[in-house]
Amino acid sequence: MGYTTIFDGIFHLNKRLLDSEAIYLLEFSRTRRMKRNPAILQSIPDSAREAVGLPVGEEGCYFVNEKWDEDSEVSVVNYNRPPKTQPGLWCQWIPTADGGGIQWNGMEKFYDYVEWLQYIINNFIEPWGYVLRGEVNWQGEREEDVGMIWVENNVIISPEGAEELLRYAVSPVSVPNFVWDCLKTMEATGFSLRDWKEIIDKAVELGHGEAALWIKPNIEKYFDGMERGFEFEGEVIETQNEDL
Image (cartoon, rainbow, N blue to C red; front, side, top):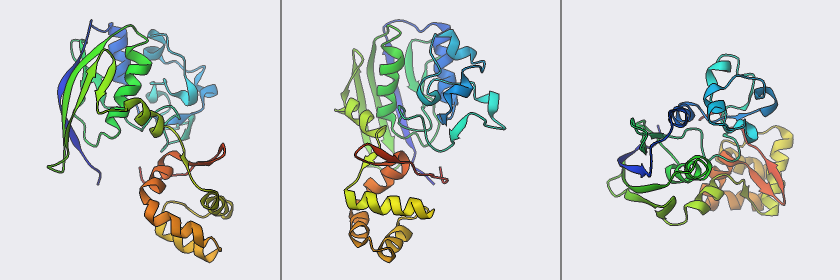
């Protein structure tokens, strides 16, 4: 299952990446972006990251030596949740073979591609002193799902609002007080939040009818919360999504 989008074109850089930078971006793309314990990672060799002078980062966001614990996963806090600053589990933008641009890696099911491009610009391209420009067209599985990403001078011109899309993608979903109370009750009883239909039935059973009525018309927001967690006035409920 899932949805695949294909991309045609290259974003060009004003100069070629250093070999160390190109290698790091390749490793970044190959690594599942999982929430990790940065304290454990501090003493772990991570040569590609160290070569470009990056720290471990919040929740291990810059760590790329996945082979170190691919069997035991001792540093992994949540296999199905990315570090809080990143929009998804996989980034499929990579450097071109000559290091002169950024392109799609050709893998299926690339989600949050605009958000990921904005992330790469913010965290790698711009800090390293490069300027990105160009146009890349996309085509989804649905015939009508077509579009273009246009970048000029490290700014995503189209689609509009890429910075806001990234901010939204890495933020927990805010819910009304009555929904928050319902979710907290579910959490306290150990009830899984994955099946929204079961949640509705359970909410009614526990006397949270208003929350049950909120979920169905807000199902997309609920699914977003399943990916990123829910929040109310600074508190966060982190969900476990075992289906990713």
